[in-house]
Length: 351
Image (cartoon, rainbow, N blue to C red; front, top):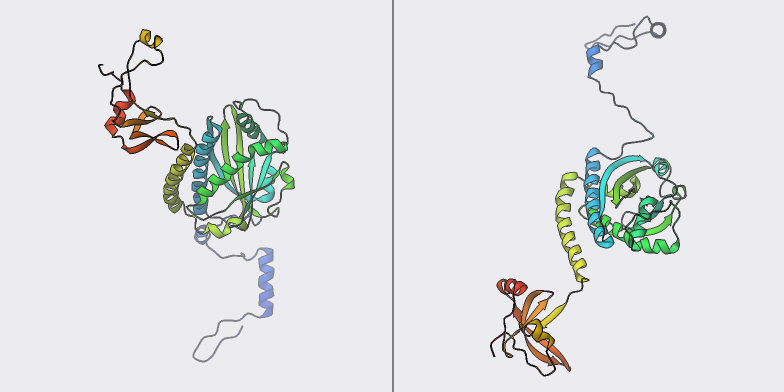
C-alpha cells in the first residue's frame, strides 16, 4: 500500500494481491466474515417478511375494520329480527388479511355468493352465506321455524327472489356501518354457488376477509365478506378505531331511531272516538231492544275521547264531513288523563 502526503492523511490502499489474499482467507475460514461483536448482533431486530403475503393494512386499521363490522353485526341482528320475527344471533368472529385465492379455497362448495358492486369504491366485493343458514332463512320466510333444513343445494329462481330482502337488508346495514368512515354505496349483483367461478381480484391479490357467525334457532352458519385491498385502499387512511367508535355510536343511535320509526310506520293501530261509558248488568244487556236509552257518563256537548288502541290521546268534538261521521281534534290529552283513561271504569249518570 502507499501513504499519503501533504497536510491531509490518505487512507491506506490495498493492492490487488492483498485483496485476493483476504478473499481467499475468508473463504477458507482463516478470517471471520464479520467482525461485529455479540452485543451489536443482539441489538439488531430481524422480522420475517413474506413477500407473497404482504401486510398492507396496519394493526390500527384492522382494529378500525373490527369496529365497523361489529357495528354491522349489531345492526344486522336488529334488522333481521324485525324482518324475520324470530330469534337470531350475529357475532363478528375475525378480520384477516390473505390472498384472494386463499379466501376462495376457504369457502364451502356449494355456497351462496352475492357479488357486491360499489360505485364509490370503484370495484367489487363478495358477500357469502353458508347454504345451511340460507335454507333456514328460507324456511322462516315461508312461515316455518327455521328447523326444516334440507341438504345444501343451488337455489331456484323463486327462492332467490324470496331471499332478496335479506340480502338488501344486509347491504343496507353494511352501508350504515361504513357511514362513520366513508359514504359507501353497495349494490347487489350476480349470484353464484361455485366459489371458483367468482373473480373480483387476481388470485395473488391481497384481500380483507370479514367473518361473522350467526344462528337462527338451532341452525348455525357463517357470513363472509371479502374486500380486495385495491377496493378499500382509498378509505383505509380514514380508519382509526377510536374515531370510528365515536362516530358509529352517534350514527348507530340515529340509525336505530330511524329504523324504529320505519318499523312503527307500518304497524296497524285502531283509532276510536268514544262518546262516553255506561255500566249495565248482564241481565239488562240481554234485554236491550231498539229504542232503549243508555245513560252515558258525559253530556252530548262535551268533548269526546279519541283513543289509539286503549290509550286516550286526544279530545275532540263530533261532527260530519262529506256525509260521514267525523271528529275535529281539540288538543292532546294530558299525561294524567291518559293514565286515567287506560284503567278507567265508567260510571253511568243517574237518570
